[in-house]
Length: 159
Image (tube, rainbow, N blue to C red; front, side, top):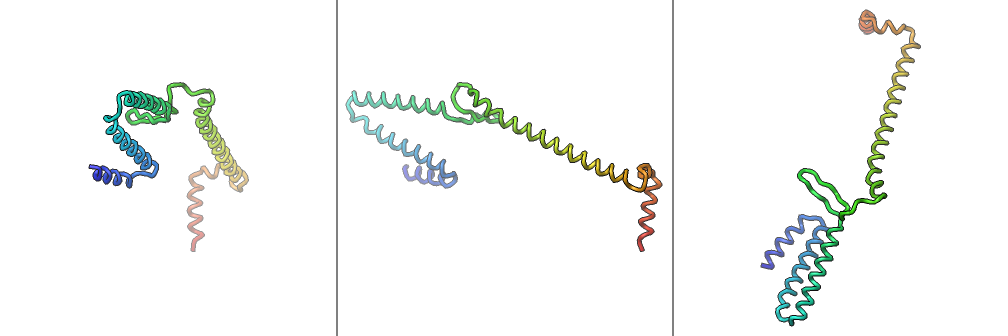
């Protein structure tokens, strides 16, 4: 049984990143040590086995507290949220840190809008300047006959 578990575990390790492989190896080693220790507890006196049981309960409660305070990804259907762990609300700096990216995004969008508006106004000013400084009056460009004149003039210029 150990060979089949080891073979499937090694096959699983090759499919995962290194940090996940290391975590799985540590977890597996802990389970093997716990199994060996559990097998040997039958020969121990009652008082020693009770102290071991109390130490095991204490260690498990500390591990549960550490897991509860750790960061976690909470999945709810098709969405997920990264939490900072614990049930307490974020402090003043935590709130600022969570709002700061939103403020930067809004400031960037406003800056882009201002630059785009300025660029568009400059382009329109250049067209207006070219129309007003040209030899033809602006009303000539709106005349349908003028467009026809431009087409026939460009065709007559070709050999």
